[in-house]
Every structure is written in C-alpha cells, then in structure tokens.
Image (tube, rainbow, N blue to C red; front, top):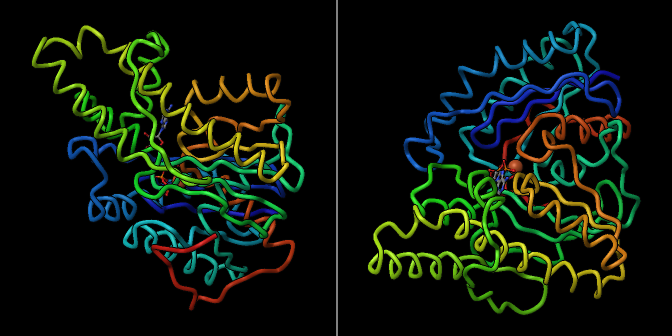
Length: 335
Ligand code: ATP
Ligand code: FE
C-alpha cells in the first residue's frame, strides 16, 4: 500500500509517501515569513501553502521514487488548525484523489501526533495498548489515555496556554524571535536550571495552566531590567534553563499523577515540544527512577509533518475508512 499524505494545518506545508507503515519520503516547507510578525499570520499562511503545495508534493513523490499512478490512497489533515490553511491541503487532496480515482482519507492532526509512534523506524520501539500519550505542541497540551488506534480519551489538558505557547511567549519576553521554543532549548543547555525559581501553577487534577507562568516571567524580567538593563543578555542561559526546568516540572508532576490514577506506565510523547532536549532527557531518566517505559518519536515526526498523517492514513486504509469529496475541514475537532 502506498499512501500520499498531506499536512497543512498551520504554517508548515508537508507531504510524505508511506509504503504500509514505513516512511519513503517526508518533506516539509517551513514558512519563514511569520518570523517578522512574531507569530503565524493566518492569511499569509494559506497563501504560502498555495505556493508550496505543488512543489512539496512533487518532491515527496520524487524522493520516494513513486509515480502518482502507483498511489493507493491520499490522506490529508481535516483539522484542527487554521481554516484557510486546512482548505489548501484538503482541496488539493480531494482533486488529486478524484483525478487518480483512488480513496480519500481524512486525518485528525492530534490523533496523528499520538499515532506517529506507530511508524516503523529502525531503533524505535512502538508502544502497546493501553498507553498514556503526552501531546505537547504549539496549540495543545493533553494527557491522553490511548486504548486503541482510534479509541483515545483526553484525561487532562490545558485550561489556557499550550506548552509551546509558554515557550514561545517566554522567548518573546526575552526578545528572542518566533518560534522561540527551540532557542530556549538551545540556551537552556548552557545554563543552570536552578538559577531562578518561578512558582508552579496550582491546578487541580490532571489539567494544566501556563498563562500564570508567562506573567510571572514577564514581571520577573521587568523588575530585573530596572535594576540592570543588561540582565537578560548577561543571564540568558540561566534564565532559559530555569524557565525550561519549571515547564518540565509542571509536565512531570501531572504525568506522575496520571500514572498513579490510571496504573499505566507506558508514556509516549508527541507534538512539537517533544523535540525539547530537556523533556527528552527527563523522560529517559524517569524510566529508571519510576519504572516507566517511555517512547520518544524520531525528531522529524515530532513537529508538524506529513509522515504522521500518513501512518493514520494507513491505519484507516486497512479498515477502509474513506471519505467522499463532500468531507469538510474543521478548525476545531475533538480526538
Ligand atoms: P498543534 O499541533 O497543537 O496544532 P502546532 O502544529 O503549531 O500546534 P507543533 O508544530 O506540533 O505545533 O509544535 C510547534 C511548537 O513546538 C512551537 O511552539 C515551538 O516553539 C515548539 N518547539 C519546537 N521545538 C522545541 C524545542 N526544542 N523546545 C521547546 N519547544 C519547541
Ligand atoms: Fe501539530
């Protein structure tokens, strides 16, 4: 089975070709245009998708050494995401599926972040059901109990900002360009995580809150800058390490509670923030410390990519879960 997968939910145009559960090609065109605005501008994102989609799909087919006529089905991201961005991917997928006379498969982007673990990849093990998924991305922060491929329940989620936003907004306060998450990670590796302390939010149960942390960081930096205008420049590594440490503590506290409440000790992380080196290291340490088994996807399957859409597409192909051209994109869609 050859699946062409298309992902266009936010600001990355991505296409991949899978042969069953193996990735033959995985192409992503990043939209650098948004950097200058400090965040994703929806109208610019959909226009860039329109420019990128044809060359990105062509590159995915070429890298996989597959001709359009060999494809078994086309999978695309139905949602959640920016409507204008989603529409570019879905229109393209619908037209191509119609032209080739092959099935069309709609994929939930958040399910894809979870199921990316089922891509067969040398050196990577797959979780077994049931497992807990911690999905940490630019728009979501969720702990999900995954009982089967399409049987998932959100047992905890953010009540305000997502973890990715916490990283990006903190970075913005420090004067770092968007998206600041990877930069905080980079500087944090050189700093002392205990240099500064930020209070952790008190949220009951398995839910998260990150907006208070952002405000705490803002006030802290404003105060320090009054004393020393060069405070951020002089302490950037330590500040980043301390912010990252606090965020990881917040995530770990809830994960420990989720394990306690469910009795499930397999933890699989996904979403763009799982690229974070501190989170990866902490989870690996947790294997020995708490007796967990942790699953961390290959770097390129963590941030938005089409390979993860393809693996869900493959699962749906096996059960013949197909759509007609009447299927609609949905900016908000539950798991
Ligand atoms: P969603 O999947 O919820 O719709 P999204 O698709 O925008 O959101 P992703 O592409 O999965 O999000 O993740 C992007 C986020 O990941 C950004 O907030 C970015 O700053 C963050 N991020 C990427 N790499 C790192 C890193 N190394 N450390 C911390 N954050 C990171
Ligand atoms: Fe995403």
